[in-house]
Each structure stands twice: as C-alpha cells, then as structure tokens.
Length: 257
Image (cartoon, rainbow, N blue to C red; front, side, top):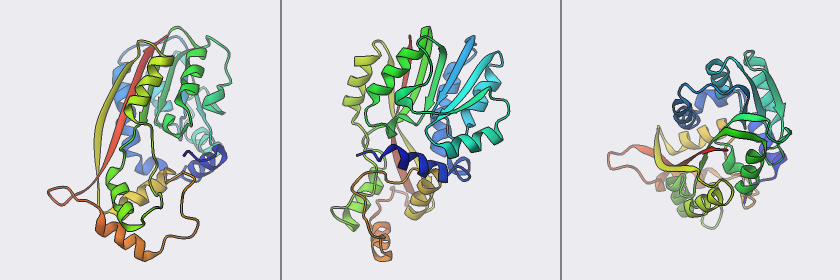
C-alpha cells in the first residue's frame, strides 16, 4: 500500500538537504537514461517529472540549452531546495504526476527518474505523460519493481514477524502489462542492481536520508525497539564474501509518442 500523497511529499521534503549526498541508486538509474538520450536535442519543452532536488533537471538544462526545462515535484520542500540550487533551469513547479498541469501536446521530452513507484497506479501517470507529449516526443521513465530490498525484507520478517518494514512495488509482469496497455511499442528494460552498505543499519539510514523509508499503511505504530533492530541486523543475509548488499529490481521505460 502506498502512503497518502501529503505524507509522501512531507517525507521527501524533509530529506531535501540530505538527499543528494546519498542518492547513489538515483544517480545510477538516471545516468542510464541520460546516456541513452545521447545527442538528441528536442526543441521546446522538457519536463523532469518528480525532479526531487533537481540533480537531473540541471543536467537536462545543460544538455539542451535551447529547450525550456521545467522541474516538477509533488513535494514543496524539494522544489524549494531545487529552485535555490539550480539557477540554470527555466522553471520549477509543485505538481502531481497524476494531474500534470500542462495542456495536451505541449512537451517534447518527459524525463522521470524513480518517481513512478510511489504512485498508486502507474497507468494514470502513463496516460498523463502520453497526453502532454507532442507527436514525436519522447518519454523516459525509471522505477522499481517487486523484489527490491529482498534482503532487508527477509531480515525484518525474521525479526518482527507480521509487521511490514519494506516498501512493496509492482511485480514485473504487472508493470509490463500496464506499459503495453497505455504505451504500445515502448521499450522496457528490467535489471537487478546491487549497492553495498557498511551495515544493515547503514542501509536503513540511507533510505531515511532519501525520504524513501517504508510508506505503507501497515507500519508499526509504536517505535521499533533496539532489540528488534539488533535481531534484524543479525538476520540480514550476507553475500558469500561477507558484504552487506541491497538488491534493487530496476526498470526503465523508453517510448516515442
């Protein structure tokens, strides 16, 4: 279950000052899309949907100096931070990806990095993206799938049985079906990525600094005691060489309108 939008906006806004220091996965996945963009230079309007602190909005503005680049995010805190640190961007906007405040056929390139997984139904966002893209426009989206942070889920299941601590995302089969339904002919690329952490607590701390902690409705209402935290760390499955790894089931969508 995805949290209410005001809660998502508040939690990410609270992390705006720490986000860029720890956004390793976000940069890894966004860089993949930036590299695929290559030297294309769409005239007109570029929209970074779910722009966060504006890290990739700035890159898009540098890559495409003749385009008007807009960074849009659900979180006022993120937009406030981005607007103060990204002077090269044309405009900033607080807005909802399910109701993009632009007219039909008004965007040439729509870029969205690791925002979609926080939406209740990606088809709603896909339809909005399709609506605002001009014929010939390009959509590039990245997201996360079911199985993300399976190690952390396994550890918490053993340490705090019956209580959810890890976000649940769509299975790949459902995600691909939704893409095919709304964006026929889109390229979908799914891969497993792994990041290394100094400890299980380091992983949880990084998620908190990103504003990406557990957002479901089944979270523990009382504080998780130190005993449960220790049990979680003890139960965390290590790699064969003893390293603490976190697995992310990543997916990218590339579509031409």
